[in-house]
Image (cartoon, rainbow, N blue to C red):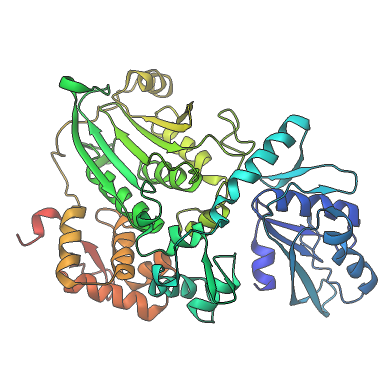
Length: 505
């Protein structure tokens, strides 16, 4: 990390800045809050209010006092890694800033006064007795991802995919060294290798061999009710398996094929196409379900239930930590912090705690009610209504008095085109016999590129966070599969995804 990056970051769930003159007891509050939540980084030597770069080279005694804080002012000791980065201070002198990287811990941490804090957004919240007890419970549950998987070995991990990930994060050692040296993915005791749950779920060749119900199931119902027996109204039932990234990418892509659209002539004379559920909302409810799932509950899978008027996503486990239905927009607690961090690298988790708030804003912009959350036994249900729902009609009327919002149609758009269906893309991929990491990258690009969006290697590089050569290779593969069409007049190497009607049958 560079000083420019440190100065550019806003204070948030996993980042804070502190002056070199901060009192050690005050710094302990931040460290405890990070350790109790998702971990984070504290930049010491920068004013948190003005971002003035103070440095620490001229104040060695104070720095030594602050470096003792994780050991002497926190109970139990907070695990902290120290990084020293060069900078130019506000007086124009060469200096250094200290980064203190805090890992999320398995315990409930307190300061010297036996006060427990939790990081919530950009603040450290002091917990009262009941919340402290709840945190103790959730701490025990959240680290299921660290537990070793009986019978799993290194051969059960996809080392090629681990290499894809390490390249994304700029890790320069081997994939095996990454697994052994980071986040407890693999622990070696003598000749025995212990493979963690997180490693199997994120990098496993076939995670379902060890966790059969760690999968995503899509069910499409006809009508607005779930019926059984002779009246059963299931019209589609699809199961997605593989590692966590593959399940997310595949299920998001498939859900996109089931969304109804309407096209109408806008005020500017151009045709406008709207989907019944915003793309970000569809993506976020699936990502949240996978990230928040209690993987210790093994008797059921994540289910995406689609009705005529709503989407219902069911994920095993209640809302984690101190998150409640009434504070979910602004409160965050990762049940599976390693999974959350992994998905952040692939752009599925932008910033911790941001997703739900953005979902609500997007739904409100469309005149739809925000997502609802319900706990049913050991399942968390997320419900999103479309414009056809009676529950959303009141919201539409309030936000658009005097205007008539076109209803979602039950047929394909009358105007405009839609990029090729995911089934066509999957078929083209299979014909080329690409490996799994390549397949995943291609589908990830497909998910992130809109209909008619013009893109090339630079856009692919941004989506995949890969090298220039890798982005060019993906573009070449898209051309080889004949699923993209050249766009002229927008510069060299610009394409869009082909329409269904343009694909050779």
